Length: 385
Image (cartoon, rainbow, N blue to C red):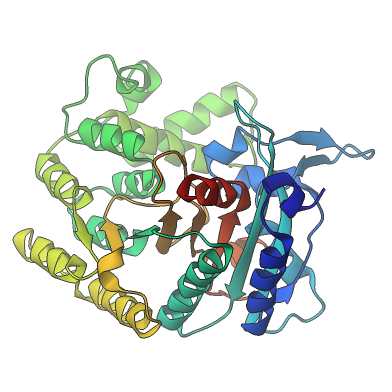
């Protein structure tokens, strides 16, 4: 069944959008629906991992129905014979995610751009391409939300926090509730009923504040007594490091209250595209943080978007906005319907500069893409009519 049949969208408009993608240099690809499950279990966020449709091949290989297109498209590129860069792809077909209501087969259409070094212009091109596609479908009155993980990373880098906390907080970026809870725990203000109480029990409590060399020796001795040489591919030394990290996280806030104040202030920042840069610079000045480099990159992107005809006042910057997919690494965007009846974005996209390396590319490959939720677009058009 085609996307037009499952969504009610005009098939001619779907073809017109795909033609526009091809005219912009995107080659049409159709990656296999069955994908290796381990790739998605390793590289996607918890939200998608728990919604995978899992199965098994005749040889025992764990497989899943593709839950998105970005990873399959990137796998297609990496598997090609001597793939050249830059490269650009587009696609149209179903993805599969379990959900509490409705079918788990979701029609999507989208585009990916790999290897462009002019990152600001690439970001602007892909966002503008998605805006144009929505106009072709007839979706009007939409709003654009943007965020940038590199700004959050720069704020973290400027704070006097242990490396384990910086890593933990960055891993949680985009999951606001979990991030807020972690910041509260780091500041020592978490409720006694939260999960920090559990992780402080027993062995981790004993390791808190321990000399790292002694802690390594204790963990390695315990593993040796138990006859364990490795767990999940980790050596005893790596396991000891992990225990020490967990002990540091379990200790909560010890002198980190001011860092928590700064992080809360940053995550509360919201501004339209016309005022976002000024708000970010004011924040950096108020909290004595040098954010000029990521702010300059952010400003360059806004200039590129304006050059593409996107009004900056239409953009809504939220400092806490990140994508829950683990491979996103910087600029992210969503386009939402004006109708309150439509839950979730019509378009979701962003930058994933680490993904191709994780999939086996021999070099770092800057990349950005977006997916369009055709069922939501059809519902949005119906709500507007």
